Amino acid sequence: MTVIVQPTGIEPADVLAVARDNAKVELAPAAVEAMATSRAIVDGIEASGRPVYGVSTGFGALANTPIEPERRAELQHALIRSHAAGIGAPMPREVVRAMMLLRVRSLAMGRSGVRPVLAQGLVDLLNHEITPWVPEHGSLGASGDLAPLAHCAIVLLGEGWVIGKDGARISASEALRSAGLEPLELAAKEGLALINGTDGMLGMLLLSIADAAHLFTMADVTAALATEAMLGSERPFLPELHTIRPHPGQAASAANIHRLLQDSAIMDSHRDDLAHAVQDAYSIRCAPQVAGAARDTLDFVRLTASRELVSVVDNPVVLPDGRVESTGNFHGAPLGFAADFLAIAAAEVGAIAERRVDRLLDVTRSRDLPPFLSPDAGVNSGLMIAQYTAAGIVAENRRLAGPASVDSLPTSGMQEDHVSMGWAATKKLRTVLDNLTSILAVELLSAVRGLQLRAPMTPSPAGRAAIAAVEPFAGRPGPDLFLAPVLEQTRAVIAGPELRTSIENATEPLL
Image 1 (cartoon, rainbow, N blue to C red):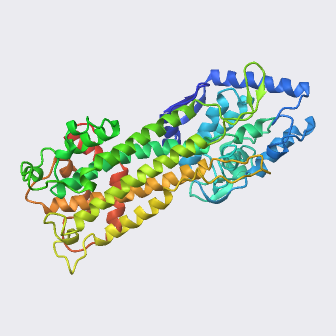
Image 2: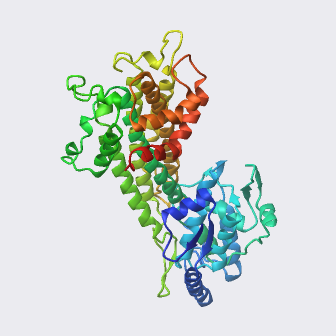
Image 3: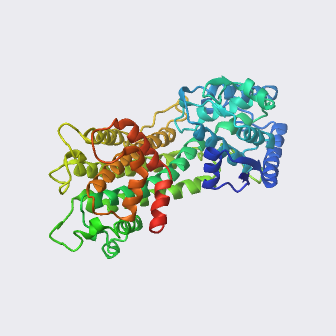
């Protein structure tokens, strides 16, 4: 696959393809033309000698400091070096690749006043799989992701670091030389254009949207399996009970769970016994209300990201009529708010899943399943400590659900006196989603154990698919196992597409 960057922007799928699948990137001729046109305007301003922020002045609190023409290229190089001031562990490769592609997208819109060679330089890094070493700390989401983008930009100059194939840190000059690439020399405004924008936080948000969409569907799967294993009722998931509270995410989640509980001998054993479970606990009965609200939150976040994908977030911007105007479009508040909201939703999807795990393991509430899902409880502890692990992760997600976007700290001599913290918000969102994967893995393993223990009654097609996915490495209920590797493999089942595909092949597509 090759992603063609147009002056009108790119699609979320393009970002995923480049970030995760190493898709190649090309600049459309229209994008090259748009950049050349806006660069001609900047060249005209330079020739006129009039003061314009970022072209003939300093930056931030130094915006009123004029820069002599002969030092303006020096200014741009100094900007990159001084702003590449991050610290900490390197960001994941997929995040850096997403960020670079989004910076190409921003430049290609023809509002940044840069030469096409600048965008092509980033394209070359992507296509040669050269990944800048971008430290995790440094961005406040103020003028966008200044430090992270500077760590990408400095590689174009033949300076800084990149991540080697083995994960080691190597010099950018060595990486460029090995790829047959030459360092770039920046012209007026180009350093600023490389680092001013929301590309890092938008990249993380787009990756998180894809992950959350998958995990919220898998949460419906594990909820249905746990309900089946606990002999819960399917009646709260009937569609007519959700049309009277018309939240679309709730209806979708309920439809998934109801569908997954059909064709089950386990459910048939009590389906018409209305005295069996007059009311299930909230963690079962309200699963669609929680997961559905998370789905609706995800729709809002997806809308926010789609708007940002077609936005000009540079500063200053070059308008077609020749004006160069300062903006605040680099401020990451929309993305920070969205990431914080989605982190709250994802944390609650995990919290309610852990409550179902606790019920499955509790002999007083699991409807005749053995304690901790061990057929020989006492000598064996079953999944007791797996639930501890899930509970500890829920507690961490609660801490991470505290919003980063309210933590503004003033910088740059009070010129940047309100910042978005969007980088922090999107970074911790990724941690929340990774944690949710682990919690759902514990629920999947617990539900599979419960379904196995209901034998000889046969489970639903979804239950049979889940057992087929987990049993090869987890075995059947029996003496205690070394659980850590079992949980790791169950995490891989949750994160991957295979279980969902198997279930859909046996039933119908999930929502």
